[in-house]
Amino acid sequence: MKASLKGRYTNDKSTAVVSLSANAGDIKLRASMTDATFIKGPSLNGLTLAVEKPGFFIIDYDVPKKDFRFQFMNSVRVAEKPLKLTYIHGRGDNRTVLDGTLTLDSANKVSANYMFGTRNCKVKYSYSHGGATTFEPCYDFGKNAWDFAISRRVYDDVFKATYQTWSRDLALEWSRNSKFNGTFK
Image 1 (cartoon, rainbow, N blue to C red):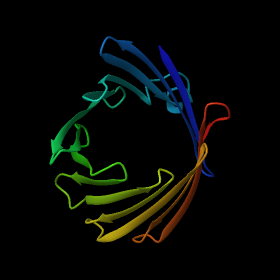
Image 2: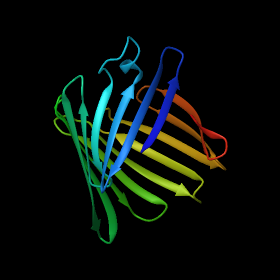
Image 3: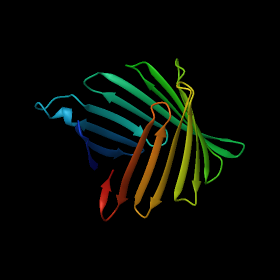
Image 4: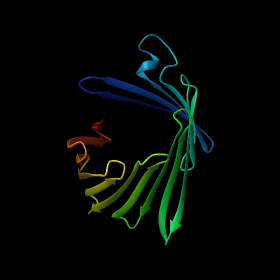
């Protein structure tokens, strides 16, 4: 059995998520609870149950909404290059998404994301220079706009800057994933 606790604090809101998972052979069973499950006394708000076979499928059940979400994953080879495909369907919001990532080599990837029934389609190129610096331009066909991201790994720290041309938002992020000093973002 494995347990995790994740918290997030911003100026206007703070949240927490607790996850418990157990392996049952090839299948992983998971229960996730948000702080909404406990704030006004015990309730089913924020409770999600899941069955997962890593790398193949995930089925989530949102208990209070009585809603299912299906995710199927597979890999194929195209011109001897791996193409990872993910199909996601949310029953309640009637939303279907197809994601694909083609790895050209260890430094270059092209990925696309399409939401069926909308003009929402994004294509992103990712270039990793020396394994420490990554540059990612992304074109959003729905907004007819570019987004840019650059990140740099320094030991256990990752510094990332993103710019969205549509909203003119510039974001800076610092995260750490250290076995000795802990994890934060």
